[in-house]
Image (cartoon, rainbow, N blue to C red; front, side, top):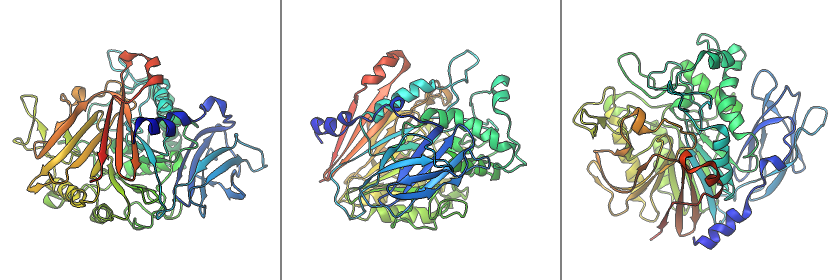
Length: 518
């Protein structure tokens, strides 16, 4: 796609700023959509009784997400593809709770589509009040993160992927997370692991933690753009770590309940897709909207593009050579979708990055930081499972094996931008159709770059052969990914505080990669 089309379909169609739209009693609003359904998560500044959503000529009753009447969800199935709907929220007395707004459904799966744009970023979480002992901010101020999001929104994406680490509030603090001062703990409270999350004092603690990092960050700015929130390690309230004291993943019961409750309250589940089995792990739970998924999702935009979203933490196993990052049923689904050429483009979008490694435990690869400060596989990584790399190779082979498409894998978790082409993994040669791998950029990182906590910037694993096109770059930012029939265009946006707040408002891509179908 040339620059003129990019500008006409993006920056020239900027969304109205949130300040113009009257939010009323709405504290936060996050919708998702498919071609036939819209699911909305909302919270209010006070208790609301029996709210409803008017969408077109229909009225949908709200379902409570919490036990106190402050958080609600609205599920509208049976919609028409590719249609812009006007949405209105009312309380039980038919009084408007906010201004009307619009959301557009996606084209039907078999429908031709000319253009699709996705905004992708990772690591947006973090309580802005947290500081290092030296007084350095652990995370960017909320206002700065919001400014970055508003600049990204000015390019009018059709969908948004917020890829993991929406929350940084590790409970056991096994790695090197921020330490919580007494005054912040006093304002948040402490979890009681022996109580359920919802309907107990834990519910209030969870709301306070998440409101600082999710509710206040997003507010109502994404109200008209379908969002897809993947969860990663910190979203289950622990760093991925393994040592002689504990192994944090897969998540224990309390971690899982916190992660599930966070999604229930703050951001939508993944809507069903005809090509994604309804019985995958974490899907079709009785306490969730019908047929929705929590860990594995799909973005389907007509016959132009399909993006498979997968959480790499919740279901990983510790079975040595037979271990997996995603369960076998999920692997089968991913491989089947990678080979279905009825869709022009297919993308793997995972919470955990392939190719790049900083030597940590929760990684596809066995690399670890050696005494010389470099990654190595000559030292055994404690608690690493060799089956993880085997699954990685199988998934890469499925992408590369479809010669009719451009193999693409985009990931989160890593606080960096990056780009590489995977040429070989193990005994498998991918050079005839290399897999294009991208790191999306971190939105909220203050001082948590890999070169600090991990003592190395991310590098390609020693177990693979790659062409490193953009070495890992530790800067804030995001990706815009554009799909047309014959091409995928990836645009990288970057920023650091040293460049000044005003620079955010005119950010342009510092790098553009065009991938063309053969």
